[in-house]
Image 1 (tube, rainbow, N blue to C red):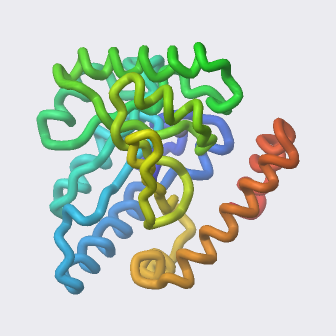
Image 2 (cartoon, rainbow, N blue to C red):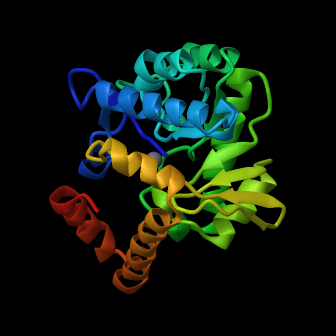
Length: 247
Ligand SMILES: [Zn+2]
């Protein structure tokens, strides 16, 4: 799981709040990670299609930087777009989304307005977020949209059921796991967030080491428990943890 990538200015693509900034990578760091993963696939005889690179937030860098790098190494991207931001400063416009789609990348929903905590909204509001976003994207690409990712990783039964109602069959979460689960006929797929401070060795160990992946998941579970206990305060505390300790 990635978000935006930047060349000169961290503010040039996507959201500019502190949590979003912590997930952004410099283009050279991103390319290094993609090259590393490509090399891992070649050495281990794994098809390039066995890796799914996903990108949240719909930033302009999906078009300017990310797609060309992925294509250079034989990969395609899965790009999740919060549709209320289409055509605004730092975000993809309609023409760029169409072009990415025609170049073989997958276009998915990332809700309409990217609420801070989708799971806290009423069922009607959750429906609106998926329906509006999926309708807009389907019209833009001229095909049905069946994949989505949940903003900020707040997964819930309501969110899954609502996404299903509007045609989503694969829903990506922020849960770092390789196992898939089926909920109400929707495949729920976890992801590993790759960050800018990860060494090459650490990126490779996420790919080949079960114990590294287990450690990542344990940390994530602890954060989920903190979310449950702290409720709204969690968002503030998470920002502090992210900024100070990158966790
Ligand atoms: Zn997001």
